[in-house]
View (cartoon, helix red, strand yellow):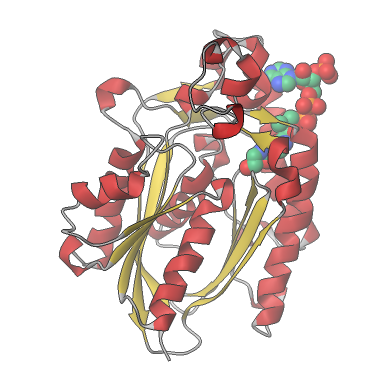
Length: 334
Ligand code: UT7
């Protein structure tokens, strides 16, 4: 019986720091509003001179993860790449990263599950390893979101929340039961697809690009019913963490750390409260990066790795909720 475990994690964020005060110059907002409603203090936006497209940021994060895992591109069997902000409409960013890493003809799989994208990707990679098809997979989440944000007052409810960045993990086969990825749990509810979406470019208007597209503000900017997303996030994330624990005959007392998707500090705090977790058992970094969508969970893991806070034998729960709706969890015994 094969199992998978994470042997290295890495991340990359653009150098360009955009503070709430910087956003005050662009729209009618305030540092106080943003901090009070979301906990965000600053985020990173890539600038063209950094040459930081989604695949390139993923490349930097992947190199760090591979170095920490002690593997080279030649050792990898596949890439599973999550993003909602791919470099092209098609192909996905996975093949671009595959080429940058020089992975010959190894497969690259693109996953579109937005904020749950990394956990969906981890689950796909875990299944490939459990089946014995592959031994070593690079799992990536990377997002370049600033270019799709309306950074005027009209788009402020969404514009202040998101940031750019990338994270990656090397997943490897091992044979020790009870270690590594214990289980993954995936859900979606497509009836809420339009609650948080970006309509264009899409085929809903018969053609991908149509005349006048750039005048249709609602089509080319993300749309969100923030309160409805909030309510569902605080319900679904605790639910799917409990599903993972129950599946493994474990309880909240067994958990050493919860790494929740970073959409809003208030969401994380409510999830923490509902699960009755003490402060030392939850890790948040939204203050520095905003919501980096599929990149969030691997960035959290990579920061913990750097702080030497990931310890062998400890139990970690990862959970995410976002557009789709999609939500997911993974339970990891390190
Ligand atoms: O990964 C999943 C992605 N997204 C989420 O999980 C987001 C979930 N939702 C949320 O995080 C929150 O709903 C938000 C942070 C988006 C909004 O917080 P809220 O407490 O639900 O505020 P609201 O949307 O009800 O807006 C309150 C007020 C409104 O003004 P009025 O109607 O009361 O006069 C907004 O127009 O705040 C106004 N507002 C702003 N004011 C200053 C909205 N955005 C801003 C802004 N700066 N950036």
